[in-house]
Image 1 (tube, helix red, strand yellow):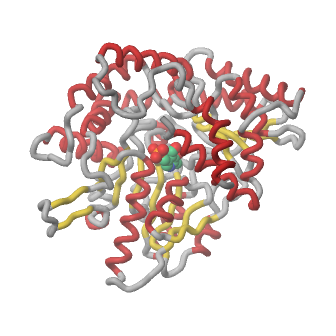
Image 2 (cartoon, rainbow, N blue to C red):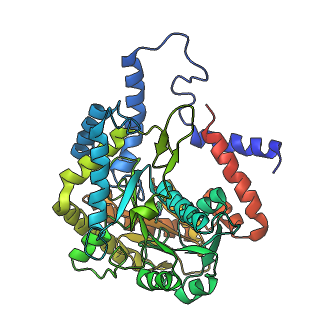
Image 3 (cartoon, protein in one colour):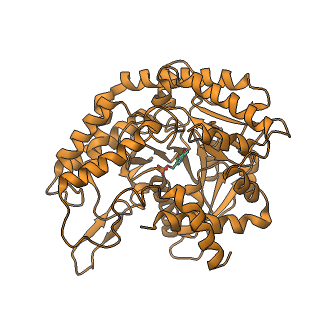
Amino acid sequence: MDAAEREALAEMLEPDLKPYHDRFARHRSLPQQGRGRDEVLAEMREMAELERDRWADGFASGAVYNGDPEHVAFLDDVYALNSQTNPLHADLWPSITKYEAEVVSMVAAMLHGGTAAAPDVCGTVTSGGTESILLAMKTYRDRARARAHGGTRQPNVVAPVSAHAAFDKASQYFGIELRKAPLHADFRVDVDAAAALVDDDTIALVGSAVQYPQGVQDPIGDLAALAAERGIGMHTDSCLGGFVLPWAERLGHHVPPFDFRLPGVTSMSCDTHKFGYAAKGTSVVLYRDPDLRAHQYYRTADWPGGLYFSPTFAGSRPGALSAQAWAALVTIGEEGYLDATRRIVDTAQEIRRGVAGIEGLALHGESLFVVALGSDDPSLDTYAVLDAMGRRRWSLNGLQSPPSMHLCVTLRHTQEGVADRFVADLASAVAEVRADPGTGGVMAPVYGMAASVESRGTVEEILRTYVDVLFRA
Ligand SMILES: Cc1ncc(COP(=O)(O)O)c(C=O)c1O
């Protein structure tokens, strides 16, 4: 794609991505005189109101995991109390370092750290799942470097093809080769294939509990045993499942061990800002012991600006977000998480039964709380169904290899009538596509292109243009 083609595409994308261009004041440079606070707040309130119904009424996959008005109002109060804090200044705000240490400790305990089998589990608070994963990968790379005493090596990580894109991002950022292991038909990684990819330069294995596309749990026990046998790291990505699986297990669901109970698991990621029900902007990365965690830290003793260290990528950080995470965890408590998990799993199973009854669609993978589905009828285009669901206000996640989509069930979907509405809308979307297979949409053609290796470069250009448009003022 050349610059002219990108511009033409940008102009096509702009009306959808920038609906407020003509509706609210635009600031391409600073207003000469500051605007009144009341006026600005009124404008921001109007936009928030315009956007609220779609997520609040449960039309979104994932995105807002709790969203209960009282819970949100409480978190807003917590933010207001702590909005000026920054854990970089531990002397000014010891409250924030207390909150962060306790968030890490509570999440570690939930994942069986601090037990006789894993007494030294430790970690840090990060800005989200992606940062937790990037940091864990950097940690293994730096440990390998330290062990190799500066010798050259091209480290690699072996991960299922279903592992989150953040692992690929880590490989691009940190010069780590990512070796992707294939999946079985049930979408769980093929451990023998993973084992065949391990060599002397492998620094870590990855498994997900659960993975994003189908919400299924990899055979973490087998991966951890393989890692232990080869003496390498093993990261369980529980960004999505970490706050669901422990409670689902207590509720009697079948949840094979995936956490620090397995001796081979050396690190984990677990998102407070998903099913931990904190506001967006926090996650926890955990390590089996402090010596491994130390490879994550940045510290320097010869900077003219003074002795400096930071545990994560950022320097200054929003302490208010850590305070919110702490406040969410301690107000919800074990009973709150058990109750939320019960409602979510029940709703997901109800939706799965509904989807199973729609002719032409098949469920993909066994999952406690993700509903992944695709067409099993060659005359029914999965992505046309995804587009038709979009016209019914649903914001679902498109998936590929195989063509499919998913609904990640949250507390928003446990509201009265949402599960039925999803199933009814899906049945009507399928009927619409069957009646008019050429029905217009944007996802179908783009996913169609991404499926062919020759046009993948073009799709990456489309993605670049999409991001460019997001940043157009
Ligand atoms: C399994 C898994 N890992 C990692 C992530 C990345 O999390 P974030 O979007 O918070 O960076 C996600 C996000 O959905 C996920 O589902």
